[in-house]
Length: 175
Image 1 (cartoon, rainbow, N blue to C red):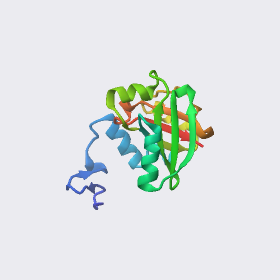
Image 2 (cartoon, one colour):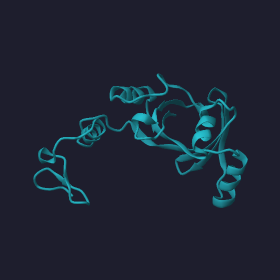
Image 3 (cartoon, rainbow, N blue to C red):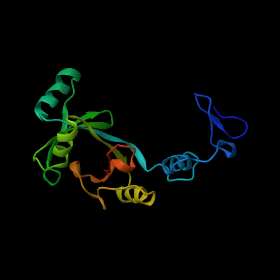
């Protein structure tokens, strides 16, 4: 709720923002506050491109989505450079990306060895992958890819390390 003194009262009743809101206590909070107040980059993320789910048995996962939700595979591809095979299930303007490793040395295989099956990363659509990747670097973010590279479906992609993205592996996707 917005107050007359320029602060905002949250559901818990705490005041934030404006001159009376106090200083941010961390870099992440300062960055989020700056963006919320219009001081940071705006609009670089245009849509959710996909939610990637790491699976051991791609065929069983495809069957699950087909039998349970009536979903069909819109695109299927083997990405040798990443050591994965993917099946994309279209959901509105986004996808569920089912991923299975094709080699024991792939990042997805290593992830599943530690954490098992489940959500692996979130892909965000961007208009310009290079600009979005540079914004991450400019704000102290750690990247996995130093430059954009080819992705599936003819896209251009780059990954942001979860260490500086609140524990979430992020894929920037330019169509």
